Each structure stands twice: as C-alpha cells, then as structure tokens.
Image (tube, rainbow, N blue to C red; front, side, top):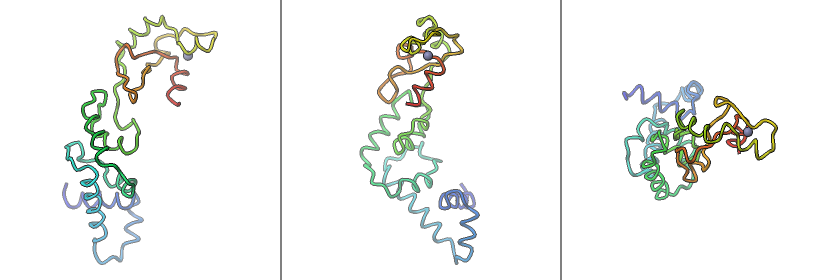
Length: 182
Ligand SMILES: [Zn+2]
C-alpha cells in the first residue's frame, strides 16, 4: 500500500468511516501527528494481542477492530489457542475471519461449511420428505418437497458438529428459520 492509500485507510479507521467530519474537525491541525500516533497504537495493539503473525492477518479492518476491542482486557494466550485450533478446522472456510470471530463470537466471519445438494438429496430420501419438527408438533402437513426444505446441522458446529450426512437433517423452511433464530 502506498502512503496515500495508507493515509485514507487510517483516516477511515480513526473517524469510524466519517472521514469528511474528521477532516473538518482537524483542518487546523499543524500536522498529521494524531493520525500516525493512532496508526501506531493500532499496530502495537495487534502485535500485543496477536503476537503470532499469520498471513491471514493482512488486510483485516484492524482499525475498526481496535476501536471496538482496544480498551478491553483480553486473554492473549487463550485467543492464540483458539486461533490455532480454528486454523486447523476444515469446517472454517474463511481463515482470515478467525480473528474477528474469536473477538466477537459471530460465526458469520468464518464462512462455515454448508451441506451440498447431494447430501441434501440423501437426507431427504432418508427422511421420506418429512420434517421431524412438524411431526413433533402434530402438524397436519408434515411432508414437503425437497426445495421446500433446508439443511440443518443436528449438532451445531460450535458444539463439534461436522458437515456430514449423519449430522444433517432437513427441516421445513419455517422450522429451520425458527431453529436458527434461537
Ligand atoms: Zn416443519
């Protein structure tokens, strides 16, 4: 990244995306010291919290991460143990998302594996097109077409569940939405 690109990135971070407001507020500053001190703080924080460098750390929105977590007490050793374990987990498809995941706990950063159409078909036949939750609730309609059903991890990933047919069940759309919003 060239100096101009870096400057824009640091401006975005320090202003939380409100670059024009920041520029207006700081138009009479004699120099850019505040910007570079902030940038140094971000870099030092990252090196302190994640001392093991991995190439996946490149290009992450570290300023935004620092703005949110820079003043929190974090267990560096525990974070590294989690990062190392997740790097080896084949269910995690987006390794660079691990850093934000270990801080936020939000699985969206990991791009976890999903069931493919072949597994979905296999499980559909196994279940005979029946949604087990519809059965459990004694619904009148329990049978659905395959495109009316969604694949669900019986044991969720966070509890060690894998993306394999044995851990897959098909639920009707309504029950799958209800389960994933729990
Ligand atoms: Zn159902």
